[in-house]
Amino acid sequence: MVDDRRVASGLSARLRVGYALGGIATGSFGTVPGLLLLPYLTDSLGIGSALAGLIVFLPKAWDVIVNPITGRLSDRSSNARRTRRPFLLWGGLALALSFALLFSGPQAPRGVAGGWVAVIFLLCATAYSAFQVPYVAMPAELTGDYAERTRLLSWRVAILAVAILASGASAPLIRNLVGGAAGYRAMAIFVALLILVGVLGAYVGTSGARTTAVPSPPGGLSGQLSLAWRIRDFRLLLLTFVVQALAIGSMLAGVDYVSRAVLHDPSASSFLFACFVGPAVLVTPLWQRVAGRLGKKRGYVIGSGVLTAGAASLLAVGSAPPIVIYAVAAIAGAGYAGCQLFPLAMLPDTAAHHAERTGENRVGLLTGVWTAGETLGLALGPAIFALVLTIGGYRSSTAGDLVQPARAITAIRVGFAALPAALIMISLLALRGYTLGPDDLRHAAVGPADTTGDGSPVG
Image: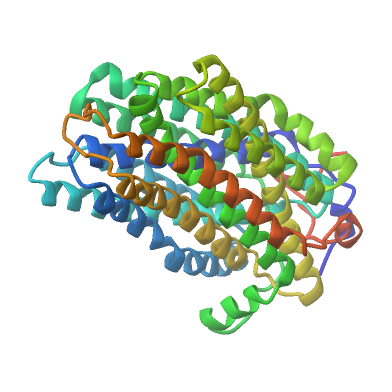
């Protein structure tokens, strides 16, 4: 069931980097729609904020249904082919193509323009599921070492941070430089190319890994979902991560609105976003050391506390000098890096521990449920932010330069700072009951030792 040779082994540098390159695809798609799709709908197409929030939310909510199905299919595929890689290739190619089309639809009438976005975004969500679910499942099968998973995910989080920074900072710049509808189209093509780089990098870079030997359990999807929910540590970790994804989604949706309506500087969105994401590149190795000394759970709590403090301090946006706001955003970004690394390193722990105890491979199903929850949180974030804008009386227009009432400015601050800070603190209530640690996971792996190719252990 478990081969102890994996416990003391490390993964090759080629495999670590190859796997991590997939973060370019997930980071780009996970960031840019949350950053610019809502402003595109409200301030380019002139769609009301409530309806725009619904258009952003519903296609991504579809992932709640399709992700567990994708996970179940990838479990079966990995047993038959000993690899999940075909999902990465075909799902990733479809994602790049559909994203290029997302901002390239008609501008009028509004009903047709909004319908185009909704349908294409649904295609994006489906393609993303086919790529992301197998991709997130792979670490549990690549190594059985508790610390090695943290090292593997540290590489991914570092590249993920670079991808988020590159896509999130450059996308508004490209939009602003080109201008108008053409700016959105140029931005979409650029991001689609980034996604393509990540997809091909992950597919080629993991070509030597052979991992899965634990059989996929029999039974229908509904029964497997019920079993997944009864895995206590997985359930608690998932609840924590989903609520935090909701907070991050709301913050991302607010960046462009803060820049234009509060700071009155559209170019500030790139600087604000860069200050939030940029620190992750520098502090991820520090969070890895925290994991080694204090454990992943305690590190996750500390990272969440730093993110909460930074988010709450952003309430001062508009009243404090911009340099102070950028510095506070950097503090929040340091916490955000920890809130990405620790749960992503803890997820394969729960999957591998479950496989060791039961002898059945549910890693794809668990990651399907995980990514469904993450996607739901990231989709609900902009939807809730849009609801806050509606309550605050935000005025939509096709020009995007209306002067907003004072209560709309307050609503932007609440959705961007106060609400995310509160959600992150609430999320930690679930994490209190998480119990898995190094002693539970020294010998937990899904599948046998890699014995050939670049997936082979190195001393």
